[in-house]
Length: 277
Image (tube, rainbow, N blue to C red; front, side, top):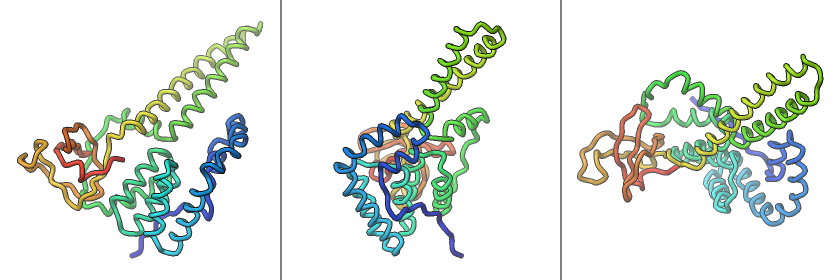
């Protein structure tokens, strides 16, 4: 049985076009991008564009190792995007390198949490992980909150917050200068509603931004790792986790990390056995 995997690899990739595609709804940012495009492209674009184009060609030709090498070079240059991580995850998946594919899908999802293709391929890769861990049930309000926060990225939540705040200021202006009682009532209550939306959007943006900064999740990179009861080899063996399993990092002592599984189990593993998302 052949399992298909979604791909999102363009024939050519231009960073300025990528920004325009995501921010075109805000004409002010679009103008800034256009004005700066002449400065950004010569200094940053040419080399990475060539690498990305070559990587796409290698991928289509089935030369996944060369595609991986080119995408890794792009990331090494300091440039990051959900598309690069997603395509790199695809290349690792096709090459049969499970842990690296999951790592890059997870990094892509951090930058674009609402992307259906990323979520689909990540779930597909997780099917090959040996460990099948039953996650602890979450309180339904917590689960809903996380789903709402992850609808879109931190940048987009920030844009929504600014937009709602501008609408709020407009409503306040109408409220102050209007002499019509009905209109003043409408703008008053609408203003309260809109400012609440602005605050919530700001909170969601900060939540997403904090997740990008904290790096408290990791992927097991060793074929099999025995978690210890203490940060040393003499510790009692608690449980075994396998390549590709996602864990949370709850503590760190020297070269040891305390990890937590989704079922609540905790144990210590060496830092070399995991890769931080």
